[in-house]
Amino acid sequence: MTGMSEDRQTRRQRGFEPASGLLRERIRKAGEARGFAVSRLLTHWTEVVGEEIARVARPVKIGYGREGLGATLTLLTTGAAAPILQMHLPKIRERVNACYGYNAIARVKITQTAPSGFAEGQAEFMAAPKPASAPPRPEVVRAAHTVARDVHDDGLRAALEALAQNVLSRADEQKG
View 1: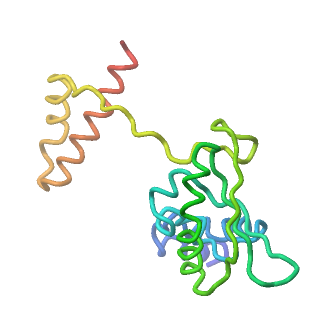
View 2: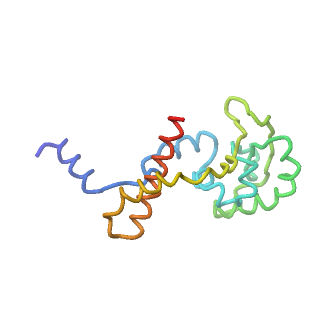
View 3: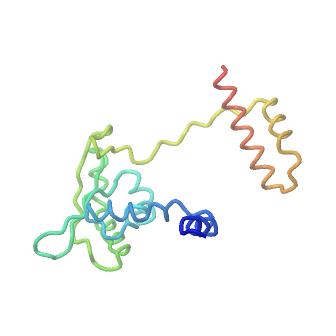
């Protein structure tokens, strides 16, 4: 076998890889360029600080001063959320340092932007929940049931029916 086919064979044997594994090196390089030695802070921001804080703030930079007495974490938020975020700064610092495993962050700084954001600081942090859509028409439900009726596993059949309903409903929306 040639080296190229051996490489392909190795890739096939590994199976599917999580997207995070494929992007890990790029995320690490981008994070380090902005001072993030631990990319987990960027990729798991919601888990680190909690959903309430993650909804209104995003880490944008970690700066290391000349004194070497800890770094400064810069968070991006909208003007309206800044006062609320200011109250949570000690908790944010504590949780971020827990992520690093040592007292890496000495200060947390807040920077503000407009809700529409600027080039990099697009401040639309969490998408607003989508409004509930109307239930599918009875014909769509019947057609979806027909598509999945031969599947014996209950969970898989239910998932296929839901998928078929979504596809058929979307096709209806595009027609009308």
